Image (cartoon, rainbow, N blue to C red):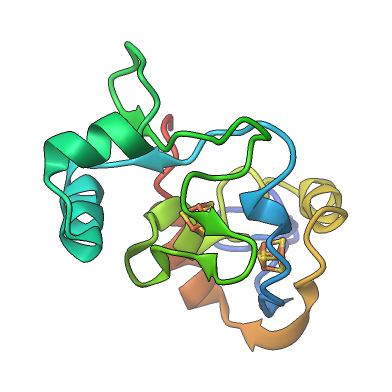
Length: 147
Ligand code: SF4
Ligand code: SF4
């Protein structure tokens, strides 16, 4: 049997993938979405912004019954930390979900899923070639809920 994309150890992106963020802000704005944050990330964000954790939760997190917290969105669905002039106001401590894009489990599921995601992100398929090892590390730690 020959190795193919479904063979363990032979993902379709084994030769690496190109990505370079152009800081266009598309992924921080526009359509509604969820940015999940862990307790550790909440502490880091509060410290970075000089706020108490309680204030950060009140101002920057969605009120919800979900087990894991999510960042609040503005009325136009821009991320709570997005600033049109300065970009991400929490860039140094942005959540794992933002740091690991586009190497998420869901975008790496298939070449088609990757191509679909690339339609909304002009930084995909250009710039630096990211090696398999780095991609896999991001995929394992993408910060998204679920398996
Ligand atoms: S959409 Fe892609 S290129 Fe634009 S800011 Fe987001 S990650 Fe960077
Ligand atoms: S935390 Fe920063 S990088 Fe992540 S979606 Fe919000 S503005 Fe964008």
